[in-house]
Length: 315
Image (tube, rainbow, N blue to C red):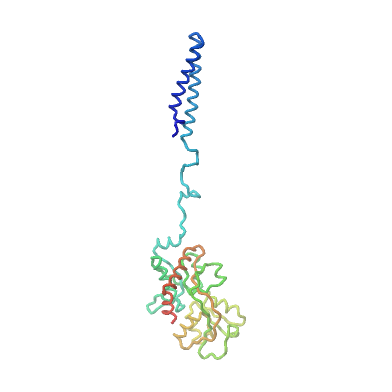
């Protein structure tokens, strides 16, 4: 620090200056002892007052102004003690719990269905296994009817809806979708004895069509006037209805239709409809998980794992 703020220096200087003043005064003028004493007392009082002012200035200069160059308390906004919120809260929770929960309706081969050991398997399930592996957690599967999956997803019963979900604008209002991982067409399936030409649902007026509850195919069938719609909890039930001629046709994803036809030679595809995107559905408040699934899908497509699963389940 500069000698300017050295208060002992100022004490020494003030004392000697006072001595000089007193010497000059006493040498040029003749005072009585009482007058001389009063002069010295008055000078000393002024000198002491000056010292007090200088001491206050020195003390003030030795401290930094409030709010500058100092830090008191926490600097975090919102009074959170400086702790910032995680950018990946859903991923953090899943890793902490060690489990990725998915919801599905295992009646939609080859996307998801029950094998001979009553285990849920399929294309979607294998993809979800890869997502869980990338997260370093176990996969837990929650089973229920398709129509209950979106409400259960919104209620937090599981993290991802993996059920061959077709992307629609209506569904986008209530859930988030991953990037489409499959583009496919829908198909109208009839009994092998069916002879009437069919190009679309309109050609089935006056007939009965079987659909699964809660699917876009069910919604589309209900929009056709003069078409009797029979809804089933499971696609397997709808296929059985057509094979036994309890229903004239059923409407579903073409890939799934081909799986049913392979298992039941009494069925055949009568018509196909335009392609639609298939994706996984997630809650709107879990964008970090949606982004992570998209990253895994892209990685699988790049390293060949996705093509291997396509060959495994669709060829």
